[in-house]
Image (cartoon, rainbow, N blue to C red; front, side):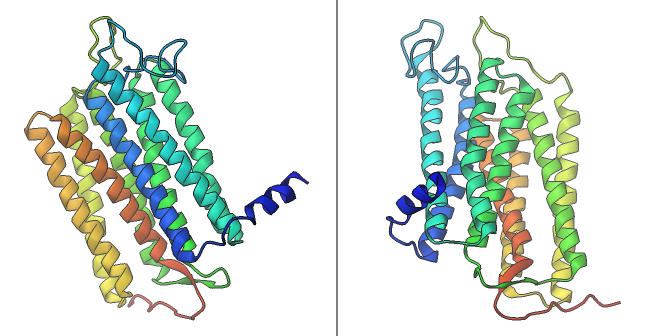
Length: 321
């Protein structure tokens, strides 16, 4: 009964075209990636406890208040980051409304609903992070959740563009899709080790003399070497995938996505190297997080391009041998 009532209300909205739905999905990608970057800005400016509690900013107030122990700039940075959550929520809600009104297939609806649900989960993780005093592993989970949401939002964007009456088609041999899955796993481990490097590095998220932020007690150099080695493996796997795609004469859209991803990974490696040899400046940390989100999005797009719904039959060329 309630469901039918809600559907009648949704039907009062204009029926969005596929183009409009994809624009909304693009906004979801940008907001999900954007809030990861603003979260990094919070960390490198030592504003992680600019609002020392959650969901309120200060006990009894949802907005910043004058406080001797919390500089106003730190309050402004953290409170601004929390306000961006509203943009994330709006984009996620619009995605659900758009695909529901357009009567899209179940798969698209599931991906759309994952956006607001995961946003709530992310908000709770953020609250736990603040209430535990920026405990390093909660901060790591916070970022990794953001990267997962970026991946899912890219899949939503791709699925929206596919015809609902299409048939799933493999665009590359199963071996190359398996290699792409391995690349995705490698990326996940690269991201995990990246959060560990940050957890042991100089940016704790707070520099208050009255509080001590728990840090990861492992040598940074050890973690950096592990992180960089996994990134080299990630790049090598991408190059190998490129040769495989050329061998089977893969479609140009797939090759273009691979080229974009390779460029992003090389740029990300350059930023990471510069960070290490320049003492981890704050601006490069934020740029590195933006690069991580971009690489995650590009890897998701490459993965999605290898099996798409289509009204046309197009079997991939098999691998030789």
